[in-house]
Amino acid sequence: MVWYVKRYFECNVQVYSLKQGAWRDIDGQWLNSSGIRLHQFADQHYINGVIHWLAYGENDERLIVCFDVFHETFKALKLPCNDRHCSKLFQVREFLACYDYRPNASVSNIWVMKDYGVESSWTKIYSFESYGLSPSVLAFKDGVVLMVNYYFKRINELFWFDLQNIVIMKTRVEIPTCFIRVSSYAESLILMNKESVFNMNMFNTL
Image (cartoon, rainbow, N blue to C red; front, top):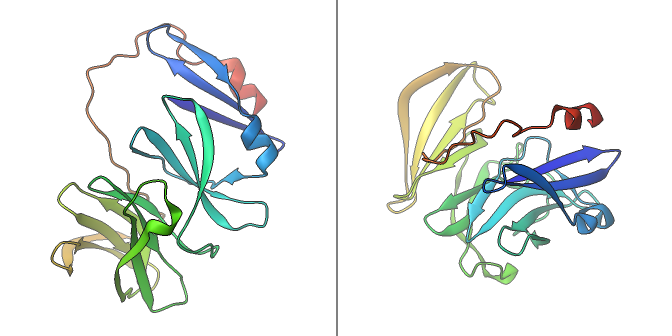
C-alpha cells in the first residue's frame, strides 16, 4: 500500500509492509521535483502491478501518476488528451481505460491503452451522446461500465454501458441528487492485525 501525504506541495511517500507491520519511507523526490499534484478525489487503479491516479501537471494539464509496486518507483503517463475536464480512469478487463468527459459537450469518448505503458497506443473505442452522463464510472470484468447521470436532473440515474455490444441501458435505480463516487473492492484474507498500523502523529502534519 502507498500512503501519500501532502504538505505545502511536498510529499512524503510511505509503503506499509504487512510482513513487518510497519510503514517505511521510500524515495518521493520525483513527485516533489515534478510539480505534479494528485487530483483531490482521485481513485486508484491497480493494473499490471502498477497503481494509477489522475493528477495535474505544472501547467494544469491532466496526466496519470503511476507507482510501480515491485520497483517502488514513480512515473507519469499522458492521457489521450490533456483537457482539464477530460478523463476518469477505470479498468476494462486487463486494459487501462479512460472516460473522456466534457461538461459542456454533447459527446463523450471511451479510450483504452492497448499496449500498456505506450502512450501512442491510446485507442478511442467508442463515442456516444453523453446526455449529461457524469464521470462517475465503474467497470466490471465482462466489459460492462456503470455510469451516473446527475448534471441536468434532480434525480440521479444509473446507466449500464455494455462495451462489447455497444449498448447503453438505463436501470430502474434512482438516487436523490448528491455527490456520488463509485468504487470497487476485492475480498482478501489478509488481516492487518498489527497494533500500530497507523501512526496518528502523521495526521498532525496535514
